[in-house]
Length: 202
Image: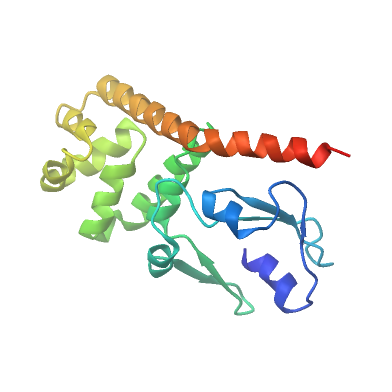
C-alpha cells in the first residue's frame, strides 16, 4: 500500500484498474476489492488491491488505532494492520492463508513469551492453530484459559493436553471460518460474474 502511494504522491502516475469491479464507492461499500496495477517506473505492474470492508474485522477507524508502523532505512513509513487484526483478516476460505496465521502467531509467541502482557497471552490462546502452540501457553497461564474457555471451548482440551482432541477441534474451527467466508463472498461473486458478462458485451 505504501509503495503504491509513492506512485500517486511523488509522480502523479495513476495506477490502472485492470479488473471488475470499477473503482466506485458503491462496490467498495459492499465489500468488493478493486484491483490496480501501478504504472510508476520503479514499481511497474505492482498490484494494489483496495478494500474498505473485510469479514470479521472492525471498521477502519478502530483498525487505524491498532495499526503497526514500520519505517525503512530512508525513513519512509509503512502503516500496517496490527497483528491481531491481520490474523482475523486472514481467516478466509483459502487454504494458503491458514499456514500464514500459524506462522504469525508462533513468531509473535517466540518474540514475546519472556515478557508477555495479558493481551498477548489472550492473543496466543485465542488464535493458535497447533496443539503445541495451545498447550504451551495454556500450561503457563491457567487463569487466562479459564477466562477464555467460553469464547473458545477448544481450550478445555488443553487441560488434558490431548493432541488428537485439540487437532480435531482446530480442524472444526477452520471449517466453520471457511464456510462463513464462503457465505460472505457468495453474493459478491455472483455480482462479479454479472459485471464480467456485462463487460464482455459489444
